[in-house]
Length: 114
Length: 112
Image 1 (cartoon, chains in turn orange, red):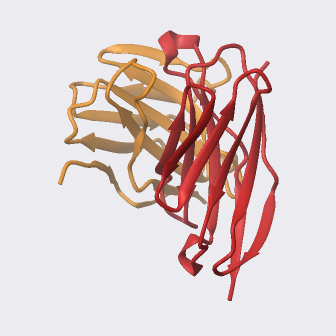
Image 2 (tube, chains in turn cyan, yellow):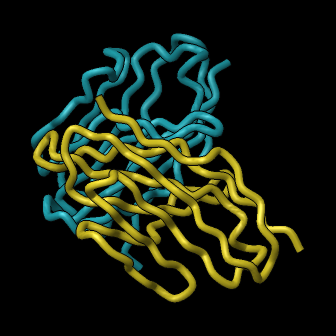
């Protein structure tokens, strides 16, 4: 089945130790998104790519970077994780720019920072 | 600015009908989406409105009034498995229409 895959599902890192979260999709969608979701809060958009065009939300910390080497893969790099970065990180895709293009979410990676 | 409001929590009884409201103020509007999210899982798409009116999909219906900045999600014949958070999200026109803004979510508890 076509889907959005995130690895790993659970990631533990140490304070200040760089970590990379991975997302892949078999939907061949043009747009990929990274969200941060803390407990009982709404998902917060960090970045999105339309094809190779990168769009950074204005309030996304510089500590967060993203890469999309090809259509199928997208990575979230956290250069120096702090305790406040512990959260669920959701990857999502959508087909394109048309109004009726809902997002398909991956299962998420839960990041713990020790 | 962008602001989306939803009630924090709601409780309803199995078999009943519940309406979850969402009000929004965004810089642009390119559609409103409802997602269901079970605890610890990813959101899953429920419904979409871009024009005023009611969209019905089985037990779920969603309504939109663009002039009022208002939407609701109606769940009929509630089942225990409907206990989840329901997220309202607005797609605005920033970033070529790719900016989704999510509301805080409404945690629905369905009681037997």
